[in-house]
Image 1: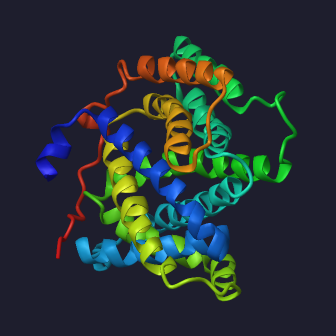
Image 2 (image 1 turned 120 degrees about the vertical axis):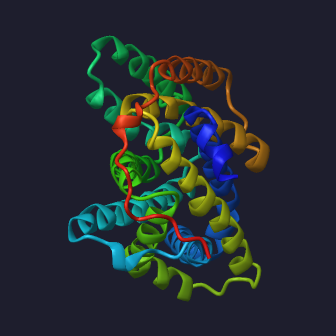
Length: 296
C-alpha cells in the first residue's frame, strides 16, 4: 500500500484527498445540527488523534526543538481551518463555501510562483470561483462568507506548513504530532458546544467515522502529495476542489448548482488541469527524514 502511494502521480493523491475532504464535510452537516460547527470539528480532531496513534505512534523522543514551531503552527492552523469552514457550511452551500475558501491557497499559488506566465492559471481559476459563488444572484450571508474567508487564510498557511512538515517527517508521523495540537487548540471553542447540546447517541460514532476520512486519510494523502509537488502546482490544482464541493453538495446535500456555477466548474477544472504540468518536485526538494514512521 505504501509503495503504491509512492509511485502514484502526486496530483492523483491530491484529488483523492479533495474528494475525501468534501465528502466528510457534507457528512458533517448532520453532526453540526447536533453539536455545532466547533463541537463537530473538535470531535473530529479528537477521534483523529485516536486513529492516528493506533496507526503510527508519534516519535516524540526524536523531536528536535526547531521542529516545534512548525508542528504547533500547523496544528493550530489545521484545527481552526476545519472549525471555521464548518461554521461557514452551517450558513452557506458547501460548494460556495469551498469556492470562497479556495482564495487562500490560490493566493499562495500566485505568490509562490517564479514564472509570471503561471499566474494565468490562478487568474482563470479566480474567474471560475466568482462564477461559482454568484455574489449577484441572492442576498449574501456575510457571516458565512467571513468564516469561509478566514478558513481560506488558514488553508493557505496549512499548505505551506504541511509541505514543510511533510519534508521533515515520513508518512503520517507529522499528522500524529499536529492533530493532537489541533484538538487542544480547538478545545476552548469545541468542548462548550458539545457540552451545551443534548445530542443523540449516533453523533459520536458518526464523528469517529468522519474523522477516519478527515483528518486521517485525507490529510495524510495531502501531506504525501505536497512532498512531491510545488506550492504553485498544488495550490492551483486545488482549484478543482470547488467543483468537488458543488458535486458532493449535489449528491449528498441536494444543493443543485446553477448554469453559471457549472461554467465556473469548467473554468476551475481547466485551470487545475493546466497547473499540473511541471508541478512535480525534484527528489532534491525533499529533506531526508530522520524520524521514520512507527506503525503499531
